[in-house]
Length: 317
View 1 (cartoon, one colour):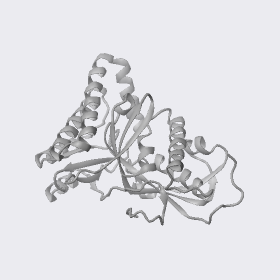
View 2 (cartoon, helix red, strand yellow):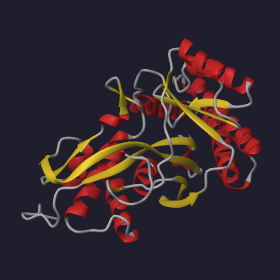
View 3 (cartoon, rainbow, N blue to C red):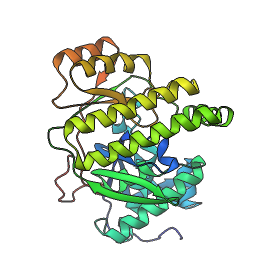
């Protein structure tokens, strides 16, 4: 596809939300289900302004063409990545801006499907693999159940359970996901028997949590997510990978005393963690998080996915 010479529309801004993965990390690549939530921290791309591509993901998507300029500053705190899938969101925003620039309707299912497919392919090519769960959240928004069936994405929108409270905390440090994935891959290669058992539990727990997210009570959902969190922690211990930082472990103890949970979003290692409970985090828990060096970062679910900034979708801007 060649770079356009005349714009189809005047300059506008396209938003793509970041994500939080509640269950399915690591196991989703084995075919387990994941629950991913789009959040109101966005990558922003202009439909007209373009520059030479720099990131591997953009090079994979746009080749030698000029690509839409993208801003992901809202997905950082104090200059550090929050771990909300900024590279995926940036790619979706840029491809969305390219579609809108050419006159495409970002509310169209066909256009969104094309954005998702192009973004997932480019992201996988640049990163040497990946499930595409973060691409799905940035493209479609809301709360999604996501799994790979025969290697192909299966995506379903689900409702957020009534009475389930969510709070987000930032460790203050960005995690290097590639290093965590490498440690887990080495564990699987060197300890196949143990790894098989660990991943079986991880997958079973993820599938149970994903199923109950649509059908279960809040207490049942928390119980299943607690099982997944425990399996994720066990994976980190067996693989000698810091998936569950000490501060997260300590806050999880305090959260469970209140009937809730606290665990890493996605691959873990720091970045953001998620509190879930039958009621919002107490002042005591928030104070405990501060003692542990964690920053409370308000976030809401973004129901809209990739769209023009002024789309009448009711999402938080």
